[in-house]
Structure formats: structure tokens, C-alpha cells
Amino acid sequence: MKTTTLITALVISLALLLPTEASAKRKRTCPINNSTDMVYYSGSGASSISQSWMTHFLDWWRAQGADFSYVDLSAAEVGACDLTAYPDLDVYIQPGGDAYLAQKWIGADGKSRIQDFLASGGAYFGACAGWYFAAGDYVWQDNYYDHSNLLGVYPVAVEGSIREIADYDVGAGYTITTLENGLQAVYWGGPTIGYEYTGELAGEVIEQFTYRSLPAVVRYQNMLLTSVHLEAFENDNVSGLSTEAREANYRYLARLINETAGTSFFVPDDPEPPGPSQCADGMDNDGDGHIDMADPDCANPEDDDESAAPPEPSDVLFDTFETGLDWALSGPGAPWEIRTDQVWDGQFSAGIKRTGANKPSIMEHAIDLGGYNSATLAYHRKLSGLDASDDFRAEYFDGQWVAVEAIGSGRANGGFAERSFAIPVTATAIRFVCEAGAVSEGCWVDNVRVSAH
Image (cartoon, rainbow, N blue to C red):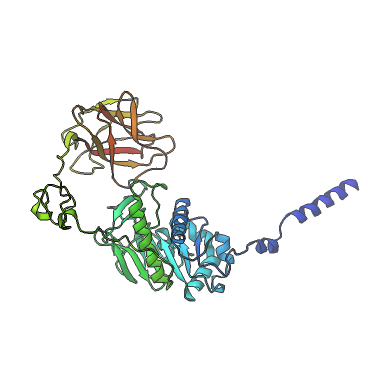
């Protein structure tokens, strides 16, 4: 009797503690309110990097004086929120990440909510995977996909990646690419149209890649779709993007969102163009008695320095690796070697794949900077698949080895990156260190230059 009573009491207690289906549904509340102007998806399928970039962008825009509010929505909240019920809600944002996971977790309910919002006049901004998600089907690395909960509101198939910009068959990663309007932006496998498998374009091409003029930014009805990450933030999981380039991207993206959504949130103007150059301002800027083009040191009216040009830097070392590998090799890992698989310029580079776990491989070259006042180390490097146990370093020796660049886990680059660093004239050697444990991991360098004044 006592045992039966105890079991009954326990069952009743557990029943009270466990949520019912009805109570679970009640917990799916919607964080949007009547003052919310924009929402962005923050559930599975939106990468943490892309979410961070989107927050950077929206916070920057508000800090400029744009009067709007935004919230992020989980997958459950997208399904729970009737996006059409909020008259001030202007824009739904789908960040980059993984379109398959996004459609899987947003599901049929969330898909319907977003479709209804767009049908009611709301605007959509999709970056990278956000464009794949907007389509009904797409091609990724030669494979066709038509997942059931893709939005299907962009009416033609898209495809990626663009191998000539960032080849995902070699190693997933990003690169900084230049658009035809001169903006520099992060490309991380975003879609395009008319590359290998697609041809028909829907909507208006706003901006293009310099490679084959492929579409990079498209507007279709009330949808803004970007292959590149205009919202990327410098030094937040990317290198090579300057603050000036990022701010130019932000101003451009903010204007595009306003145009697409029909909103008028404040966007700062682009910086004023510079005034007349020194060789066209009517002044004797260097005090030598000659003005503008009458000064022999003025090359043309756009020249902004009337003074004599400094001497050209001298190349103390310039190695394109076209004639072999004349470097001292050391370390317990498999040695650096001349390679043809990844090359920045010419036919050869120096590279190494799979040095072995915890086995760095080093190549070193002596330099003589005696008599110079300043020096620079520059090179192009490509990394593939580095994980938590791997490493890449560029260093100079000045009594001890000093790293000018040190890259470890998660910094695989889809293409060659150009790097340049000032080094002291007391440096007597430079070296590159690579540690890559797996067969798919590696480091390459090309066009290594030490120049000095």
C-alpha cells in the first residue's frame, strides 16, 4: 500500500513538472513589438560570424542617427511571430550561414510566416546563404538541391561557389574581392547566376563581381540579395578588410536597404572628395619658388606632392620561387617545397601540405639591411583547413624571432591574401613556419619581398 501510494505521488509530481504540449506552445512567444522596424534570423543555419556582422552593421547604422529598432528571432520565434501583425516592421533579414540548416529549422511554419510578410509588402534582405534560402532550388559545388522549406520567393535557381574567387573544392574559406564599383567585400561562397549551371536572371543586377561581371548584388521586387558580405566587420573573423572599406560597404548597404524597403532611415553621406592636389592648388607647397605644374617635381595635376619624390625602395630580397627554393629548411615536419597546385603569380610557389601533427616546418632566409633607414616584409600567402592544433607564422629575427603575422585555428583563406609589415633594419633573417596536421591542410607563400629605403 505504501509503495503504491509513493509511486502514484511520484507520477503526479512528474506530470506537474513536465510541460504539456499546450504549455510548450505558449512559451513560443514573439519578441517583436509595435516599435520594431527590422528583425534578423539568429537560429540554426545563421552562422555566429554572420550574426555578429549583422549586429555590427545594424548597431553602426543606428549610431549614425538612424531611428529604428531591431530584434533577432530564433527559429521557433519566426514560426510563432505573425510578421504581418506589426505595421512598423519593414525588413526581415536572413544572414549568411547554411541554407540547408536554416530551412530545416525555420520549417514550414516559419517559411509561411516569411512568405506572408513579403506578400504583404515587407522587405527581405538575404546575405550569402540568405540568398540561397530565398530561392526554391540551387546548385552548390556541382550538386543540385531543392529542400522543401526553402522560401521559393526568388523565382530562379542560383549557384555557387565561384571557384575563381574562392574555391571550396580546395578549402572552405573567405577572400576579399573587389566589385565593379570599386568596393572591397568579403566573399564566402555566396551565390550568383550565369556561372556554370544557371542562366536566367530575375530582377535587377545592382552590382557585379569583376570576374566575368557575374551578379553580386541583385534586387528582385522587395528583396535585396547579396552574394558578398557587405555587412562584414574588420578583424571579426576576417583579415584584410580595412575600416575604410567596411564603412563604405555599410553606407552602400544601408542605402540599398532603404531603396528596397521604401524606408528613409538616415544614412551618412560618403566622405567629401579631397580638394585640389598640391600640383593644382595655385600654391608653392614646398617653398622652392615653383607653383603647380611649373614645379619640376609635379608629375601631373593630380600629383599631391610638390616636393621631390623619395628614392624608390630597393629590393633586398625578392623571391618568386620560379628558379627553385633557395631557403634554409628546418623543423621536424615535412619540408617546404616548390609547388604548382596553388600559385599567386607565375608557375611556382613555396608550399607545404600535411607537415604532421605537432611538427612545424620552417623555411628561413638571411637578409642584410645595413645602411637602410626602414624596411618592409611583404608576401602573398594562402592557407587551407588550419584547425586548433595548426599554425602559420611569418617572423623576422632581431636577437629573437618576432612574429608579424600568426594565424591558427579557423583562419583558412579561400584565396591568396597579400600581407605587408614594417620590420626593423636590425633584422637579419626572415622565416615562415607552417604546422598542418591533416592531408587537406597546408600553407603556401609566393612573391616574398623585403624592400628597404
